[in-house]
Length: 126
Image (cartoon, rainbow, N blue to C red; front, side, top):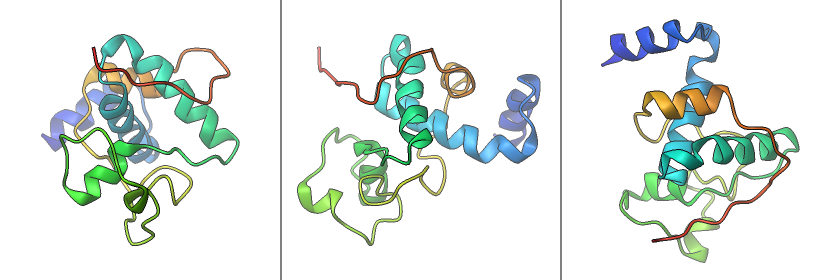
């Protein structure tokens, strides 16, 4: 699995020193956006937030630490927990590492976010 991931990143000409960052962003995009057509926009939102030092505010990172992977929401207490190193409500910047194994499209979205100045997106359950 590691060799395959390295191969995918190398094929996309991602320098090794960016692998961790790109995989972390791609995993975040994949878990938050859920629908592939939204990956590039979600990537833009997260990159815009990083650019201005804004918290990423991702429920997916919070639930990764709590182990509630299927949950799409968090509590006020979860979001305020400084003991959760993946808490992107409490801590700014990317989380410590990837919260899932991202697919090729999520990796591409992390590398090539769409153009836009958005800071927010709304998740809906259809």
